[in-house]
Image 1 (tube, rainbow, N blue to C red):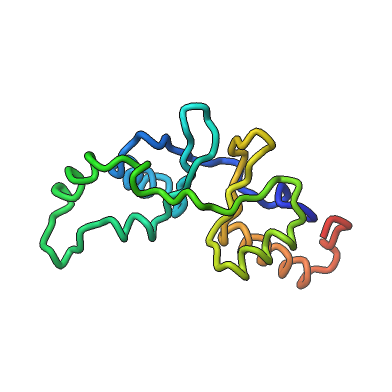
Image 2: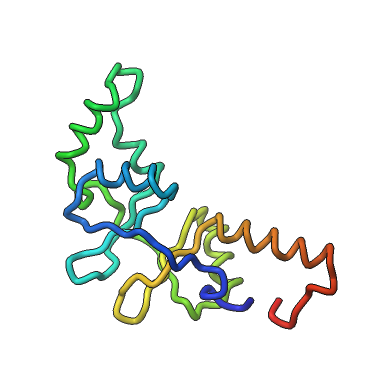
Length: 150
């Protein structure tokens, strides 16, 4: 494994910037993701909304707001109003060590993977890194599984 493409997640669930926060919450609950890439109408990557960001825009349970009320509020907040737009990205061809070092040094939970036209082609998350670590530890325990690719 030498480049981001070797471990990135290709099954991504991007949303459009004109959709609302209730759609983000539903997506996160349904497919169990913590990072949602945001695209413009031209399908170019324009931002990111993480689970942590969504929590920051939620009314606290301490305010005694029930989930239906929160959902109603979320229906009126467009993603473009709360998404982060200053997002570091990477490419599928980027050296994996370089991408992982950037994630570690900057405390990124993910790096969206884009092509030369700024279209989203994948995402590399801390979960992908953990899968890689487990795979490498398995090869360490079973040296006959070690291949030239590692």
